[in-house]
Image (tube, rainbow, N blue to C red; front, side):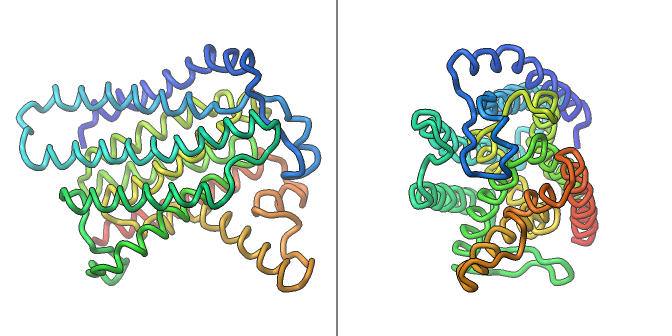
Length: 337
């Protein structure tokens, strides 16, 4: 992988996202774009009400700008690569940015509705789900149609498995599920951005092992933007990413795994997202079956740990450590291909 472009992308993403905080946070305050905490989460979270939200715009701008800088550097460093492989790499990069931006747009609309209604409820589940499925289908169809992906999945210790038509429902379910899982993870100061940083770090390594330059650049931009955002989002947070940021990161997370043609890695590097989503599903299902009993003190699971006495910083560190372990397993699976 081209080290110079990776380094420039990383530095640009961290610097730009950090610097954007000086301008964007006061701007969000002036617009009175503050987070509203009603009955969501532990009661002490209500003291965070009014903290500027939609800081995900900082992440989006940092990623797009740093990617432009990094990719231009890559082209200038290797002008002889104008071939089919280069065009395919460029196509994967564009599609990664597009799917992340499209999911980020859903989050933006959701955030705007919450701000307008002065409550923590924006789009209904149905109004979120339908466009999410449409985006996932669009992404998969275009990727397969123009050579960015095939209808195969790679499974550890098994190898490539041709799924045929089943590729589409399985992949749509995976994409939509993980985008919403990343969204659920954004519940504590610094949690989603720190977990996504280590997820992206693992995907940089996987991209290098498998030879996917564009996905490596994209993962680098996401990792750098997460660090830049953590400057402002680390406990106590001065800004929240909102659904604008968490949905954008959700799209980016799935784009990385599909960008290296290894979607199964989502279940390894993204183990924290998976646990967050399953804890929520288990809690709701058990609550309904038992007419009021609960498995966890509160779901998703980060709130269970919080109510068990762990601080927000401790939970972020714990979940980051779990992500690092999952990332190491992804690296081993990539080496085995």
